[in-house]
Image (cartoon, rainbow, N blue to C red):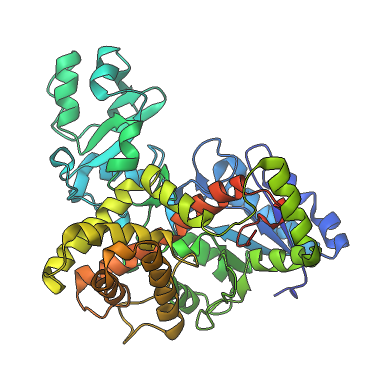
Length: 484
């Protein structure tokens, strides 16, 4: 393996493909770069400018040059003395007709062999969605879209499909009873499918699959399942085995159900690979020592380096000027919680509702003396009070690690101070749930899903909202940073 000195990232796209990148090898080597970090190279949605919306992890992306182009790129880089680090996305895939696994789920529903591949709630509270997937892509209610003639039937390579604009959806076998269905027959046909086309506004409140952040076009993948892991990683492990790449940059590791378990499995499959994770460390947080990786992709370093150029003695004068010019307070305290609560209500009500319903079911089992309403309120407050992106309590561990328990305790302290009206027993119950003091499958599922949600809530509430509202010194408004 090439000695690791410096990494240079290249963003590949249909307009900057493998052949274009190959010509930069000599220049990068001359800069002292040892490795090139390639953006995702597996098959993505057609025309994708970034590649993080993967539709087929078993193939190198054709728009970039396919297998031949990739091998030629690597050969060129090797001749310049450069190693290759490949960006890999294990957390999500594009919810698109270009994704054969997703297409099969929409075609066959729970009977699809790929139904287990995606994190779908097949039993949501809405009777209309029982055994179906909500697809919130319409600009208006379904009845209106049908009335306007926006939805139709078309011939495709695989037979007949439902069409809406340039979007395609499968037709379940045996459900098409008329060769040219009229408006009423088309509505009946859609009612017989394993999905529900709906107005986009239903997505935040009723979406019944896990997604990347608040993007319904990126569906969560269950890589904690061994079969799913094998299918997702077959291609990249082959690239590692053949020496075409030296390592992997793991995208959005905090989105996974069990990051430590995932990394342990990946390391066992690729013992000699250089593995780094996209992990946002905040405040005094450190990368978990037990994770079998070489490090993070560097947000923490950027904040440290940026801090070298900040003179703390200027804070009072800067705060005074900020308040004078904006009329806003220069205090950052409380703003994060306020914006996290905002995005929970605006962007994540479906996820919040699912967690709240689970907490209420478990309350009836473990703490029947508690009222339901305070439990649901406390779940919301606790999500907004987490001091880090997430904790890593594992169901297969004997007990929670000390650092995880400390983070949960800190979040409960902050939440209980903000909502003293909810009472100590509620917080004790939730603490025991999150630290898996109660054992069982549903208990473990609650803790895992809570941990998967605090990260997106922090990302959208802090990075994408609070940072845009607090501009005292914007150089501090960096991922993982603390502008306070």
